[in-house]
Amino acid sequence: MKVKVHGANLTAWVAAACLARAGNDVCIENPEAQLDKPLQDISALRDEPGLLDQIELQMQQGRLKRNLTEDSETTIHWLALEHNEFALAERIVQHLAKQVAEKLLIINQCNFGVGATTQLQRHLNESAKQAVVYVPNNLQEGKALQGFSQPKRITIGSDNNWAITMTRSLIRPFLQNINQLLLMTSREAEFTKLAITGMLAIRIGYINEIANLADQMGVDIDIIREGMGTDPRIGSHYLSPGCGFGGQNFNLNISQFSDIFEKRGQNSLLKTVISENEIQKELLFKKLWQHYQGDLAGKTVAIWGASFKPGTASIDNAPSVKIIDALLAQGVNVRVHDPEALNNLQRYYAEEPLISFCTAPYAAIDEADALLLVTEWPEYWSPDYLQLLESMRRPLIIDGRNIFDKEALEMYGFTYIGIGR
Image 1: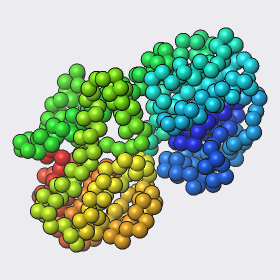
Image 2: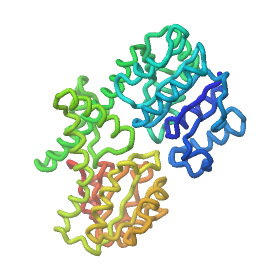
Image 3: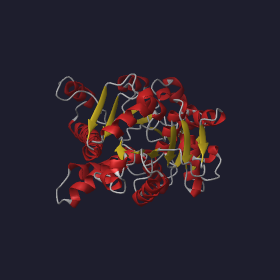
Image 4: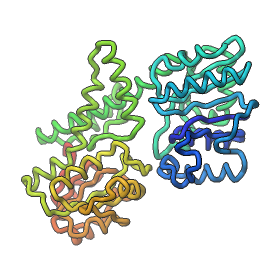
């Protein structure tokens, strides 16, 4: 099939790569800002594991092209625009409606909110088989290629039988291991997408809240969450306390859903979750401040993990940024290691003399007065405790993800501070 993908973000590039790999003839239409930009300089490609290689491979094999002139044979268009580009989406749909007389399928994967697909459909002639279908963007940064090509669930939001059949035909290569294919109206699909994100955020916010309470009451949150997880009504998913969540899409969707409640005059738990999450991002700094009773100037602090989660180089809304900002404001020498995010962090702190970027984790802890574990990359889970002890000036570890063995560290002589432990 001939498919044109509209967009410049991670969602657009992943869709283009996976659709091309499945044998389609794909063109990705980027805005002028990316028109002649080398692929290596596009952050969405650079930050996502395996994506740049896959894009280059599909281009070499001729199945993927960039920014072609109008192709009248292309009747399938994939919208993957930013949340604030609805006006652009309308212009694209209006233009296509004039160019393609019949059998035009537009798949909307944008986070525009509830009712957006219906608004786009108003520009089309449904009787001429011109239709917009909503397919929620369930992309997880760090696992984007796998999530698109091997999804566990797919939702198709449409009540147009022709459009549903065409959409299923296009995504058929990705349905082999699927658990659920859900069909609903576009408004229901848009609402479901936001409702799922909101529920996940509330679970994370709640476990962080009770972990902070456990700290005050001398209770081990690991025991508590184990007990909670055994209740089949609750389960163990998204019940790991930490120093806050980040990421661009996750935060955006939560804010969108919260805004819907607010516009309709309803109070929402999500508004509290958003504000409390920003406070939670400062928790490791506060614990360090309390340990040293505010005497932080001139000290050296090592940070393991800067990306907002393992598997990605992105630092969008990452807790590490808020922690580093607070440390630098106190005159702390910050030494950071991250397997993927150092380049992004260097660009963000380009003119900051107090921060060092270390290519090896143990280089970051040399003569450190504390180690702050912020992102739970796999290589951090089982460190060499003796090397840590020998390298650090003071054996203080503040574990923002509760990945270390508290008893083992204390046995070695470390001061260990976790989240609710």
